[in-house]
Image 1 (tube, rainbow, N blue to C red):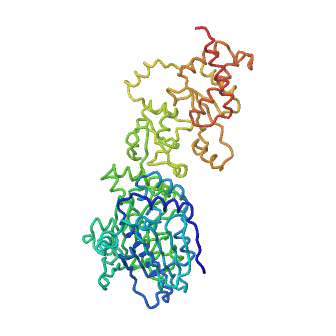
Image 2 (spheres, rainbow, N blue to C red):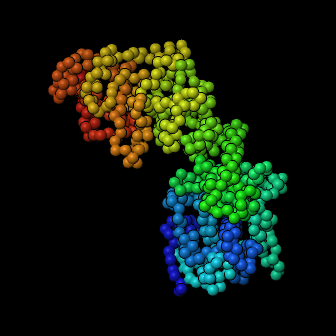
Image 3 (cartoon, one colour):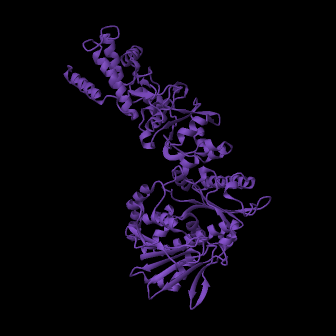
Length: 637
């Protein structure tokens, strides 16, 4: 086949441009990324060879070889792993088949340190263009006859063609270095980089010096070594390798289980949140090994979906070495390992929450939305997950535990109150909170989309039901006041209930007709004149809005309009109604009740605006407002 010239996928081209022109100071990491990819290729062939031993042929010993040619200004990284055919070269090196690619590119552009995100996206190969003016990839897939050449200068296009000089098996990547990058032609420099970043690689990394191949790394699986022999730097670099990440791990778990079932685990919790954490197809990042042989990085039963932020490995001594990926899910040994790993991880998080609450708060900001998925997915661990959960509240932006919330409940409070919305700062302004704050009742803010799923599924915590403040029936009257001092302050406000409030409620209900489900005097309002609430048996208002936005429902339920009997506007309207007697007289455009009807409709629109709901007729709202303002200026006084 003759040489073909192809274009990079648009997002891949943008990422290449950002990386190649980055001022990233630590350019030596390109070698770490290429060695890491080579190690993965060897791991994958080792697994395939379990059932197809002919793939390794007469070359069963895996290795990664470095070579440099100072005269030609070239450095190469070779492996005898699985290799790639033509289609895989195009797919793996020319496109980025991940959802959320555009969001990732946006992050790279917006952050000066954006290149640090490159590994988290799984395209560490592109870091080669930080130091290379051209990159050539020669590869032959194990078991296939044809070899292929991929080449590019990183400027939007690449070529691909057949290559007779491709390795017998595996991949060789050759970088023609840019001027000024000659340091990477020094064998001693390459050796230092390997010992710093890739000592943990279980495949030998060799370098030819003076005609002799020297192994530069320990070439043994890091997780099999005693903890006392592993430095923090080695642990950190293994995280970078296994997670394809550039951030620092927040938490490390290295353990060995012995007994009926034997396995070793080396797991990490990242310090930063992957941008695609909530993509529907997102998988966990824990690789399964059996007796040091890589099996799969997509083992469904190894850790639950709500721990998908974990990175690392689990190595089993008790699973059969030739187990297929298809039968893993139903294997009882794997189920026991998965349960134990999950329990150990959650226990470590509990310890961290207790010993370092400020650090834990940052972790919760990153991954709390994922952990809360377990509240409805994993009933058996719900109690532990509730211990780990943190919620912002009216008490402060720092998260509170449910246990602490219960400890602060005033006398007479018999429910855990919450309000759902997009963000805590917007929720703090909600009029539905006013009566709760006046009574000293703390309200939790539920701002994660997952909250709309677990809250309806879980009725209570420690015997206290979860109750939305945007629903009717708050029962604030039975909650004790905050003390005589607060009661005196309330009396000093001079806020007296409007006389004839029942008459006004009846009038507003008649004026609004079927636009609302009901109108009632409010216990929850102290400062605002009105608010909308859902009926006790109806769906939470925030959830309804979300479902309507996503076209899961056609229309929302009618709301209850609550009016504040102590608000000056409501008192004025009540007095006006008593004076003109509009309820029993003529209404309509010319009747005495017409201005009050318009005021009733304005109250409903005001409640909609406060709730963040769109007005059904903005033009009518503007006309009513203008009319009432005009009447106000025209009144004597």
